[in-house]
Image (cartoon, rainbow, N blue to C red):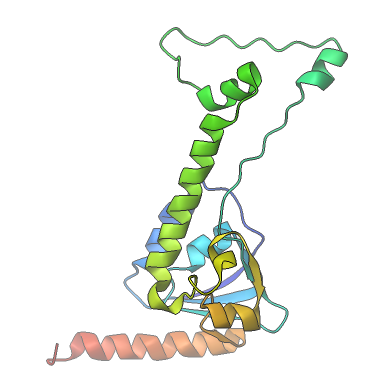
Length: 187
C-alpha cells in the first residue's frame, strides 16, 4: 500500500484510528511524503514501514498539539450581544475546560487536554519509528519542529528521499519479501 501524503496537518479527531491502522496493516505500507507532511499528517504516516520524502524542499514534522479557540466576548459585548449558556444540572463537567477559561480566565484544564494529545502523539511516533528516530540527539523532533528532507533523514523522520515511483518500487519489494516470509517453512 502506498500513500502519497501532502498535508499541513489537521484535527486530532480520527487521526489515532487511522495512524494505528497504518501501523498495523496486513500488507506493507510506504508513505511518499509529498512536499509537506505536518502534525496529524505525520501521526498517520509514522507507522508506515517506510517513509520516503519527495525532494530537497520537502518539509516534515510538527509533532505536537495545540488548541485554538476564539474569545469573541469583548467584541460581542461591545456590539450589545450576550450569549447565555444553560447546562443541565447533570452536566457539571460538560465543556468544563472551556468554561474555566471564560469564567475564571484560566487554561489549566485545556492545558491538560492538549498535553494529553501531545503525549499520545509522541508515544505513537516513538513506538512506530523505534530506533530509526533520533529524538535524543535533537529535541526539536518531538517539540513541534519542522525539518527539510536531508535533516529529516538524519533525525529519522523519513527513511530516504525519492519519487513516488520509488515509493511504489519499495512497496512492491516489501510486498514480495513479506509474501516469501509468509510462505516460508523457516519461520
